[in-house]
Picture 1 (cartoon, one colour):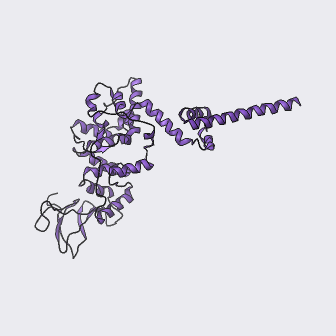
Picture 2 (cartoon, rainbow, N blue to C red):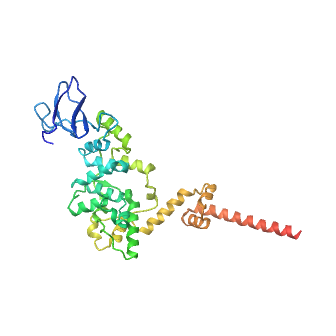
Picture 3 (cartoon, one colour):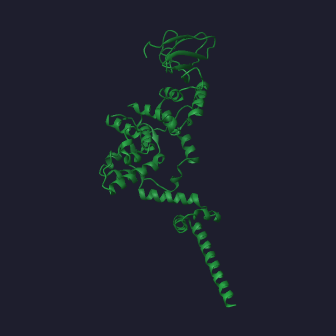
Length: 365
């Protein structure tokens, strides 16, 4: 901003809150700060730190302003929560970006995702996760939606030479479902003789085996309170490490398929090792064979639909199409499940035989 919009603020004794009423359009910005008694600072709209000057620390020890609070009016409820979160996030290591975005409510977060992708140095792991989480297979089938979408923006920026850093880790299983939905779209288009609108951006397939994201376990109280307020409004959360995020996912996320599907071992340079493969072959070399994935999904569904230890649950398993469901249960069940089915079958046959004998006796009499 330069000097435009700069405002000097003198804080009272032990000043904890600097209210900045410099207008930028209709917004009013407040910056939470913690300078010492009688300190004098220069605040900037949207700033999260102030530069060294005669009354502030020198290079290497510059203070950091607290979580911002941007208001559209004097009403404290009329707040730009997304802008405040991004103002804070953009000053953090990209570890924080990756940890937050995978828990975000997309209805509230897509504007922040857009700003992340505007950064040419955005880590490729972040870009990859956003690409696959945006369901690019949908955009293969709906090319008119591509230009205004996150996948469209990512493809354009890759063509510009963006995203050359790949320092972070994320697990391939995080995007396994949308990756296989993309494979299914490619196979369907190939069968129909339709050329995809865009080529597979192979660098986004990973794998991403960099450092595991890590941020402080706790920030200062003001920042923690700012984050709490934002997440209360926008949903989402900020896990403090990759391990913490992964524990949450395996405890109640969408990763149950890991029990049924083993992914291929990928060489260090898949772009070179798999250069001879077409797009479907390349993706299957990273994300596993599509047929094996479909089989794993069916097995997962059966395990969740029917507990072999609870015979009454079979009623719900066979509702709708009994023969098909029973055949699926037989095919994908364990030995105990199959034994249970055999007992049920023998019971039914015995009941039918008894009914026939009773009918014969009745007619004979």
